[in-house]
Length: 241
Image 1 (cartoon, rainbow, N blue to C red):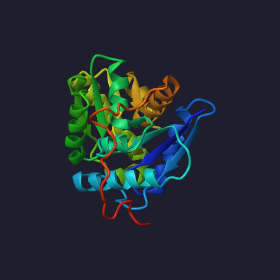
Image 2 (cartoon, rainbow, N blue to C red):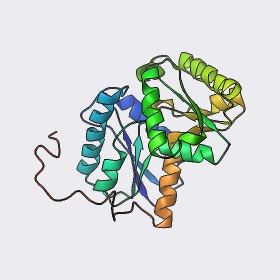
Image 3 (cartoon, helix red, strand yellow):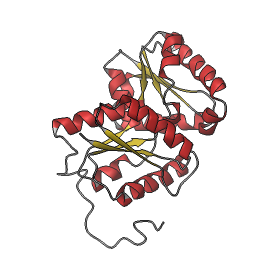
Image 4 (tube, helix red, strand yellow):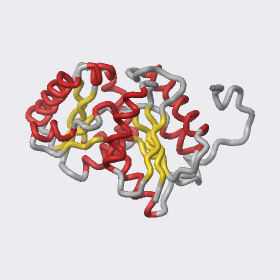
């Protein structure tokens, strides 16, 4: 059975634990989920600087991992770095943003994403555009909560996220909701109960897509875009512990 690395994009260990729990709940019996927390980076990713920093940190964490693995899940919604991992690795790499969008597109005509702060909205929109998933996206809605607030006040977080999901269904005509943050893992049941529509947890979707790619014997094409980096001197890489 496969081993899947699930990499948090921030340095908050408790969030890694929540992501890992969601990943393991979604995984098939026998699949091993190994959750990684970057040793460098921001405690939460809420903007371009922190996202690019996270991309470097995630790549470094995966390269430093010394055990065998069959696939990687990048557990950051709208974050940079998936392409770099695909160049570095021979195994499948699945980003939770794209996994959520792909799965949601199979479940309804249009979907909406409910995320954290408003400043995260453009990053998610850009990631969906790059993946070719933007035409099926009805909206990307901000809950107004920071990533860390999701953990600090879970009860309030659920209420605010549910309210935005309801607006997405009623006002934007969304037929599916995607949870737009790795830290929202596990909230799908509450949102579904309030909206009556399918709710996609990107972590769960990414894990099952990764398992399917491994089972099919498929991985990233290496003939052009994601060919391995050309051999050359890299100053300061990998990062020092």
